[in-house]
Image (cartoon, rainbow, N blue to C red; front, side, top):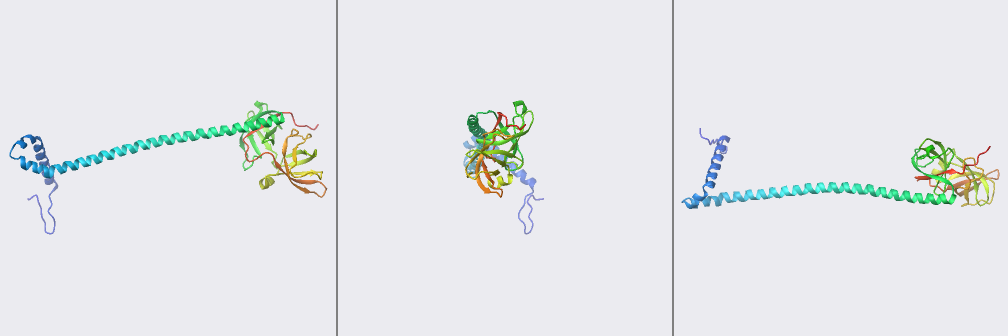
Length: 291
């Protein structure tokens, strides 16, 4: 049976086993030519063989060289890309490390500023104090109740006063060995006996989260002097049961008349109760205690 099969309307086809044999034979012939190149160059086949090599072998060799060069260039590019990716990962890790370090340095800077401000506050009041860091707070926007990282082991006691930002924050209501809970003066259930510094007369200062959320103020009531004015400083009274005297509470911002000829209104606290971080605990003197 002929290895080449032709059918009507179809192209010539060669069975794969014959095609493989032909290619194998061709490879053997090319190998023989290569191994006997010296003899051929000196013999009568030199011309035809050189012509065959010029027509078939040289383009094949150039093609193989071109393909090899492209493969090498591609491999080199892939290697360079891999190196750049590795370098990029290292640089990203370094950037992350520097970002963390910078953040820590910024935090240390701000804490140093806060400590300096607290030191100035400590010098201003001349109290026996200890610095503490706020570590947690009640849910919500304001620091009306929060935990500090100092407690009984540091000599703290219930009702010790807390200062920050040049004024009164609140007092300790509960504590453990290394923590204490602070209730701020803006809390709804907190009351302070205050004194209008310019008039040396007392009033009642009440916490109000609703008012503080609305205007940033707390309220006062039961004031009996018509000379009170906006901007007057209010400090803790010398007869307060829970607070040491003479500490700044804030400044009167609004005044209203009551039917019983007393005054009520609002006070803007000296402390920013949205951004508390480091506070001072006053260990001495003690608040006035009614007997």
